[in-house]
Length: 127
Image 1 (tube, one colour):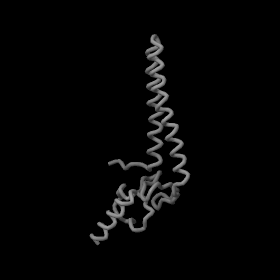
Image 2: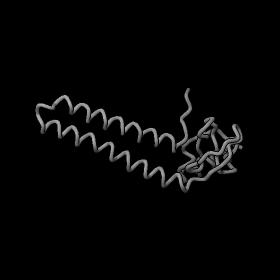
Image 3: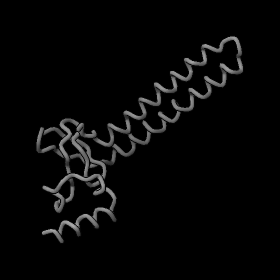
Image 4: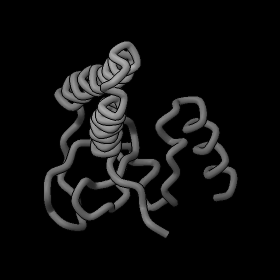
């Protein structure tokens, strides 16, 4: 099973995919050069994902600036963590900022506060 990457990198990947989708839609409009109004519709529809990608890249830049930077214990490189748990950008090692979750199985639900508290209480009951 392939481990998912760091959240910041996954969001950037979606933004890059939107750029290519927009370019493909605009390129498809070139097949309709004989009907200018249809070509214009494809060009406008292609610009929408590119603009959405711009917004996503801006958003990722803002959240990346306030993300917590930690050193990965596995590879020793610095990585940024969004939320309580995340993967290392380089080696995909699960990382956590919560001392109570160290050594526990990685679960993405630890990033949501009410789910994290529920899972922590279940872990304490098991012990």
